[in-house]
Length: 389
View 1 (cartoon, rainbow, N blue to C red):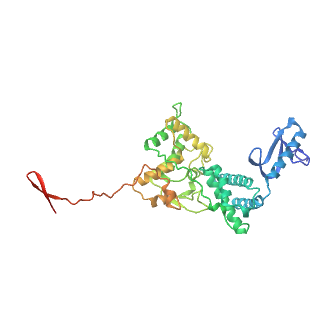
View 2 (view 1 turned 90 degrees about the vertical axis):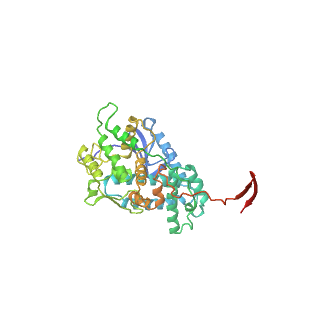
């Protein structure tokens, strides 16, 4: 039998392929393309109509730019070695659950992209000579943004590994403070919550929506179970047992390993029954789309936003539901320590960040003005005749 014909022709010895009507260069490993600022193995050179000579010329320019990116310092060599180790570790730690594996893979791609951006910034530096001011100048590009905290954490882990290997003596990233992102102080009122859940059920055409009841279940479980959106989106039926619902929060799964077992109240049980009833097909996930798969973050957020628009409510997000639940719990008399357990936080300071200013501490100390010594005077003929001590 003859060999199957390859779908993509190549220019011999160049790693240039004809793909999707363009000449594309396939680099030996994923690289940061200076022109697109994206990490990839496939790099588009030019349309096929421009000819092979143009493709070869552009490949030479591209490879030269990538080689130049490597810089004159030893930083690229060390971070490349560390990155490969981290990628191997992340591959081994990937969750078995298919949906969680997708979330994990996204995190892996983000890590690789960030590490290559960092590599480019410090390409002319020697690891042992980098000082806190160098790290600060790099991070200041994203002052006040969450990405600055993420990239500081990546740098700190890298330098900690370098210290352990003897490539440097101190961790310069550890000495740099990053401005925290501004905390949201949005509180969803009961009226707003109910208005949005009602709007989920009816579309602009005044007809019942296909997905409304399922997304309503999602909102209600977010509120009653205090979990992050990922935990509710990926909640499986096999996590629901006689003792309750067992959560291992994805965000802290590797760092803290904090588990939360949540009792199934009557209200939670009713929502679970509804989710089972409205599911379009049998699924391993409690909250599932019409194909029986968990909703994506973007997909369910879009449905929520449309319902908010129909309800004429602005400025709230799905993430604010967890803060509403936290605030309502404190308002109803639960302690911060109890709330910390429910949110699976490792410290109380993080928990306090979820309680909105709607609930302020009530002062229970009441003081009277200081008492003054009263003077007594002797009055004669309507005039002060003297002071009596």
